[in-house]
Length: 503
Ligand code: NAP
Ligand code: MG
Image (cartoon, rainbow, N blue to C red):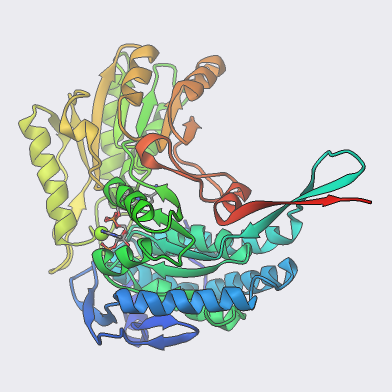
């Protein structure tokens, strides 16, 4: 991961840039920043040191109503959806360029807001957000509709149409990127959107909306209402004039969106939810060092605050001791540090609530009899911030809470297996099915295992390598519907048949 040559190269330089940032903190509705109708605001604190960055508008039902009305008006007027796909694509590509032009500012805002290392914000969050928006901008004028194989006395066209107003609700772990995975395909297909970012990380979404306007997106097509889940999020989920809800977040809240839809207008719902992803390492893994580094990164990247975190390591008994030594040393090489230092690989935990939650899981694991072989735990980096070093528990059994529930922190559970059948059985013994991996030299074994694992993404001899061209999403209670790739277009469009009878 490299910083661009023009980016600040020290924590002090990033801090200096931070002092000059002007943060957007109001709702963005119909092309303008406006305060919440109630006038209420909430503090937006930095995960780095707890400092209040700004007070953000606390959007509620009335603001969601205003935003949905603006989105509906722009959709009905055809301001965006009636533009030729090529013209919509041009606006999205311009937005991608603006994201790159403002890379330092956006990366810094993300790091200040939710604590991830600045190097990752730049190389992952900003870069992949721009790539995602550009991908849909490049793709949308290359999609063709269909003509059905009817008798020559008729013509049946099958056309794709945008759904209308899309409600997007996203979490705080990759705030900009999770939003982009929805905005790219939703906007490319001509929909209008109301986005509610997580209350802990609303800042980049607001800036993104402003940049989209600068790129030429008409007023009302993209609205952002920051606020609390129970207020703004629920109002969006229950809104009678929202055609689809696209959600990323926890499985519990995902289920609420299904309920909101059932109790309101039966809006379409797509869900990207939690995970408890297995990483299987067999005795014939081609490169134990690479596998160990990958296993460590798979759980410790982004402080473990990752839906696709490979939180269960299922390792073959024959190589276990050797392999765990390597995993522990890879974990030791990722101590938490100042998120603004470009050399830091692990940043701050989101906040006190998340930190306490992770510590509670660690206590539970010890009580249940798991053995800590890398005792991470709290580290002092900045007063007012919460930092946890990588932790690895050995002797975890599949029934323990630490093996079953999503921790969303830098905690790896090791389960020893005797053979591949046992590994697959344990891997699939979860309510989740987001990602999985298997390390083996045997192509036959790799493919059979990939087929047997019930997960939306299975990696062989790598972990969670991905690209905007491939779909991402889960089986089982990890949700349904796919982000990324051309398949994501399906979530934001409906098929219409137009049957023409000829004379
Ligand atoms: P969360 O609590 O479910 O929140 C996600 C979003 O839903 C936030 O915007 C939140 O707003 C909103 N929300 C909360 N309660 C709501 C309610 N009653 N009605 C409507 N909206 C509500 O998840 P999180 O803690 O932010 O993020 C962590 C979770 O996200 C993990 O489970 C992780 O696995 C999952 N995740 C999944 C993916 C994926 O692609 N599968 C990617 C990233 C994260 P507030 O912030 O105001 O509460
Ligand atoms: Mg939350």
